[in-house]
View (tube, rainbow, N blue to C red):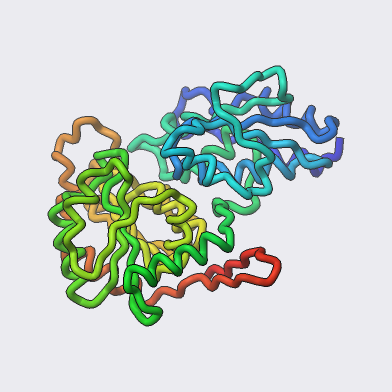
Length: 351
């Protein structure tokens, strides 16, 4: 076996004494054994969470290219989640050969099955140093990453659809447009809706155009935020969302899947954090800043349920903080440049 190939795999020690290693040495041993297998078949399991699925794509790429002949990568996920949203997130990714439902996995069809469903929670504790889930997924799989930025592969029709959507909404090319995600599926990461709405009203009054993201079943977003001037509510699927996002000047969101989609595309982003640590979320997204008063609380970051301080770290976020941070970011940020060549292969130049 080529010794250089062994450098592609490595063990990561646990941060808490006595914890079992996230992936035992036999995982790395198995990967090394597969060096002699022609195009090994590897299945990645990750059931839910659009942001988490995006954060596994660097691991998919590393596994794909770790062998003398590229591995065949099957991604097994919840194909019904968010109306097939996870399948759409993985679409066109050259590191993923096929996507199947997680209930269809037959381990006998693969040389190796790696379950990435929940290896991160072991490390995400207050006493541990912040570490990005991108790194945790890779460590659990047993690979070292060369490129740590997740990948989402835009298609020309998505970009054009996004432009048309904004035009239909009355957004001009000279307008400053902010894509806003208000509520996440994890309620502890949600800012008080009144604070968020006051901030959006002020941004609207300053002339910014707002695209407010709402799930089709998300009553609060579609109703509470539907009467803000200079705004439009959007509730279509993730690929159309990506087309809108790449045509916006900035994204405003909590710690959510939208944060990671914006990070993959390089869109300028302001993300609002409370109990979670942004140093473990945005450190590979060069065009993203965090609004995090929680850093001033000795108990933050934390994972306590319920919170002893009743989420005081979130309550410390004010309307003025959001508006000032957004204006500062949108004034300094450089949007990624999107080119649509004749062969319909999208090129994105990120900062």
